[in-house]
Length: 415
Ligand SMILES: Cc1cc2nc3c(=O)[nH]c(=O)nc-3n(C[C@H](O)[C@H](O)[C@H](O)COP(=O)(O)OP(=O)(O)OC[C@H]3O[C@@H](n4cnc5c(N)ncnc54)[C@H](O)[C@@H]3O)c2cc1C
Image 1 (cartoon, helix red, strand yellow):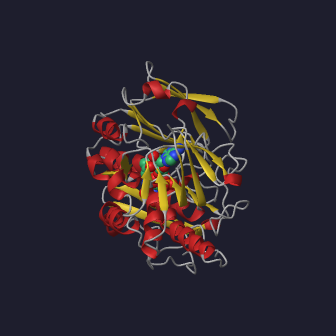
Image 2 (cartoon, rainbow, N blue to C red; image 1 turned 30 degrees about the vertical axis):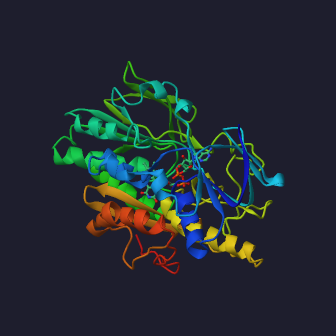
Image 3 (cartoon, rainbow, N blue to C red; image 1 turned 135 degrees about the horizontal axis):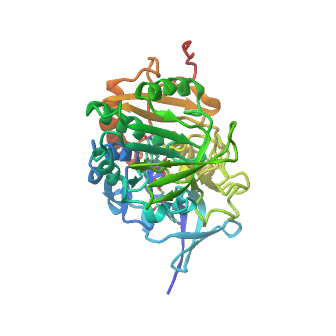
């Protein structure tokens, strides 16, 4: 029979955000009574999925057993949250029970809406239809890239924002193009990038640099094209044109390979809950990460309403703010406005080369290192492939909170 339990702090989701917050809290106070609700037995380092899809990283190296990541002294509740009752400080569980709390941290990530594209769920994983957005399909991306031949047509899609890692749809387009270049196939192949939005990137400084990268590979960019359907039998994808001169029309393209970034949104159980905003995301102050109506509730990571770029890098800077503010509440002091919207996106522009986009709210460029961030660097490739995974598993998920600061006084060099 389902039970009801109570913990001082309950964390919903044991992904990047949940484990980081739990570990930091335990470092600060080993006696804190904390529970993490997490249904999955496997935890993935998703930022390396781009490299797995490009055949330069093993999927197995992105995977760890969830139980091995739960910090000592934290109770794992192997269940799914299904509802929130913040007036009674309680969370409903799929098993039928409930969990009471004094403080709640909500971070179950976002939902991938594969079925929002007609024919996609059926087509995915065979016939050249692949995606880096799932552990189940990411290895197939590399299968598809490897099997491209002279004259192949390759499509890369990007849905409406917000999505997790907004740079990921184009990162794999550059790596696939570089693979084709190395095999002397690029000139005869037709590579298309079709984002729903009107620019390569939300930050104009990086968008201008990425226009040049796409042009260098001869990638045909079609802005404001939104994938509507995939016809696996005909190997044809149809896009709705959502802006520009041809707005309201649709375009169909044949493909040999199509890399799909699925439409994304808040999880169903979050949408419409008392903690969600109108768009369905968990409401949070963009600087304190605290819920505006329930002061004992915090949110961070992909599920959160704050207008930062949804990345693990953002969580690296959000988690210490959530942790400090929880401690402030416990000690009856003022919460702090510690998060400035920082996010980072290591843009893999070629095998061995990364452009490191780092920025805060308002699209202000804020690099960690004092060099022109538009320059594609080999050192950043090392950081992406070796440094960041190490930092994730051995530092961030272990609750360390100190990271080198980003430069908020940086002045962008002229074009
Ligand atoms: C292809 C790809 C490339 C990326 N590249 C980068 C990159 O280069 N740099 C970067 O910083 N970020 C990158 N990211 C984004 C990064 O991985 C995410 O932003 C980050 O993992 C989000 O962390 P989270 O804790 O919010 O969600 P997740 O890590 O997704 O964890 C959510 C957890 O909640 C659990 N959960 C779900 N539903 C429930 C429920 N009902 N109850 C309880 N628990 C639940 C899930 O099982 C999961 O364990 C990339 C992501 C992808 C897919």
